[in-house]
Image (tube, rainbow, N blue to C red; front, side, top):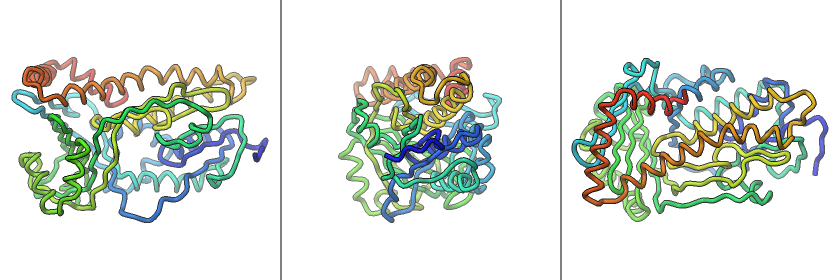
Length: 374
């Protein structure tokens, strides 16, 4: 093992969470080694889009990354329309009602990672290392994702429960402007989200995230583009105009996961290495960036005599993140199970519940505040 006294923190995983942590710790003057995963084989373009909340945007602004994003890679969400699977199930949010700039910002995943890695090239105290390099540091931060190999080697138990679902993602174009409106349908047994976007066409594009049972997802992925578009337009009922594919389709399995411990002597877990939630609320990266913010604050506030890898110090980070991550996992898992069963009585109850919340301004403000990270 390469033991180097000039290293303060080793970060394993250079995705959005790992790169953001490296930038945040560099700003504190800490000496960071960032180990990127092995490059993925060349394939289809990245069609992922992140829905970032106000807290995540504030962090990226503080890291001088937000302003570096191309204008068409960021689209503010001014309104959100949520529909159940029966009348009167509907719920809406607007930035104007919440007195905020935007409910969320839809960001091109590839553009964000490019901006982060461009910033890293100019960051003092950060050096890149190969993933196979063995590095000893007072603190190792694991940001390798839900399949973290280092977490497994450390023997940290990770409880993962698969839903038997896959998320289909793609870029779409429409014959109508999106007007900054995000749309989501909760139906038994799928959840469909359209995220307003300006790629590949300005003002008339969407990011698709369609969560379906494995068998149905496989059927849709196997369809020719025109038949997939027909199924998609049938599912959305023309609410967002006539939709067409603007990219290839991608898919991944869905589940909920939580590490039994997120800190220990000399190590901490962040992002999907620590917790995985269903994408129906679009909060996965927001949780990871909140991990970055809290760990950076915890390290900055440590006593001068306390080591970076001190277990008691790191437990402060763990305690601060336990409530928010557990709450988000409970909400997403609960919503999924609430809308999955086709039981008539439950169907009526859940849709009336959506409608009731729509008429309770305080409840809507509370929900919007949680989603915005406020």
